[in-house]
Every structure is written in structure tokens, then in C-alpha cells.
Image 1 (tube, rainbow, N blue to C red):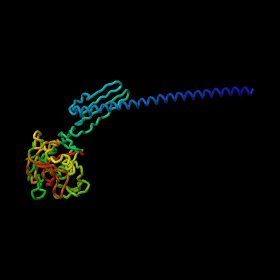
Image 2: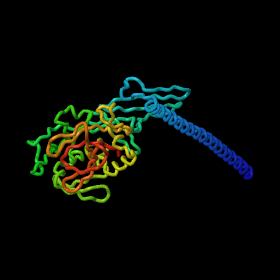
Image 3: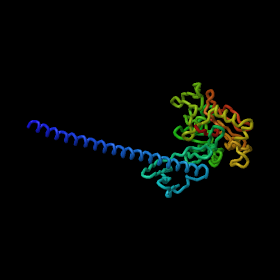
Image 4: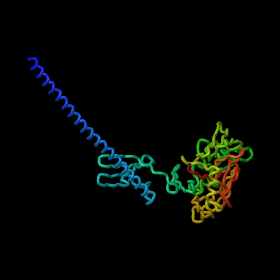
Length: 356
């Protein structure tokens, strides 16, 4: 009897064990199948994301080609329409633009099968092609060697009358007049106090104004040469450091050229540098150069520190960021040659900005 009971008990146990084993096998098989399906699905999604990114990149490259090679003017395009679209089997993209205030943003939405990617397109700056919008005025750009310059003299700020009466200040007590003495705003001279002369020829700026530091830094202030391309001076109630690439009144990302950058320019242009930088007879404003550099420097004339104007149509000076002694700044004159000279910091000269 006991043997019979044991035999039946063992048979029941075997059945239970068998069921457990079969369940385990089923679960393992199901899990494996699930893992395979899940893995395959994940790989498919990754593949679609990669393909969508490739579609997006192809759209960005097309936009660059249309702008830089075909001359597509994105600035005047009507953003109520799509810029460019592409529809293929399983893939597509749409390139559009949106105006936010004065800023125009460009977006691309690219799709491959079930994956869509949307991002903003940031177009690279191309010197000689792109312009620079600054304080309501659009400046052309030009590449000369490895340098990128504004192709026009800077014309920014409020016009101030040059005179020997208030609000102008005789900073020396002996006839050196500063009329750009409002440190809270950018001020400019226009030749002969005629506002129309700033158009095309650009404004004329005192050295401190060009560097966007207090006018008190212009006279009887020694700047210490830090021997690393920078200078430090105490003036206008504080300490001011002139950087190697000093922005001054230039647009963001641009700066007042330093002496070594002018030397590089002259070295690149060679013995006929002055003719290469002067505007030609067919330029406006015109001069007697050939403008082979594309810099188109016009004969803007100068404003003397004594307050009068001179030499329009025959001469111009362009400031560097470099001080010298207590009262001088370094400029480059464009006349019979392109060469450096020291002049009173309260003289009014042209400003050309160089890209950082």
C-alpha cells in the first residue's frame, strides 16, 4: 500500500515538474522572441533617425548652394511661403523662414518614414558675400588675403558739430578741441559739419571715440604697454584696457585694426598697396586708385584737433587701436602711400573695422 502511494506521489510530482519546465521553456521562448522583436524595432528606429538626419543635412546643403552659388536672396524672400521643399519615396524636407522682430530665422523639417527632425539652420558667415547690418546701415564685406574687412568706412553715431565753442571742450587749454565728449553715446563728425558728407565717406572719429572709451583718455594720458598687444590707462575715472582686438564702436565680432594687422595688409598687397586700397574712378565715392583689393577707401579728409576740416578728395587717415605717448594715436594715412603716422588723439579720422 505504501509503495502504491509513493508511486502515485512521484508521478504527480513529475507532472508538476514537467509543467514547470514547459512553462519555463515557453517563457524563455517568449522572452527571446520579445527581445528579438524589441531589438529589431529599436534598430529600425535608430536607422530611421540616421536617415532623417541625412535628409536634413542634404536640405541644409541645398540651401547653402542656392544662396552662395545661385544668388538666392533670402533676406527679401516672403516667409509666408516655404523656401525649398523636397518629396521622395519615404523621405521629404521643408525649409521655411520666420521673422521675429528684425531677426529672420530659418528652419528645416526633415522626415524619413516615421522619423521627423526639426532644427534651426545657422548659415556660416562668408566674407565678401554676407553683409553686416549695424545700427540701421548695411555694410559690404571684403576678403583681402586672410583678413575680412568692412568694405566701407564706418558711419555710426549721432552727428556732432565741430567748433571751438561749447559744448566742445578745449582739453589742452591751448587749442585742442574735443566735441565728441558725451561718453554715454557714440558721436561722429561729418566733413565740414555737413551730414550728407557722412554718406559714402563715413564719419570722422576722435581716437577715444573710435575705441569707445571716455574722451578724457584722449589727452595727457599715458597708456602702459603690457607687451602682449594690450595697453592699460587710467582716465575718465577708471582703468581702461585696450585689447589686441578691441571692438570699440565696431559691430560685435569686429574690431579696430591694430598695427600688426595693417602691416599684414600692406605686406599682402605689395608695393602698390596704396593704389589697391584706394577707390577707383568708377567707384562711388571715386578716387585715383585701382581698388584691386576691394577695400574702396574714399578720400574722406580729416578733422584737425583744432576743430577745422581739411583734405577731402585728396587724403584720409584710418585709426588703429594703438596709443603713443600721452597725446598721440597711431593711424595709417592713405595718400601717396599707405603708411603709419602719429597724430593727436582728438583729431577726427576714418574707422575701418576688421573681423575678429
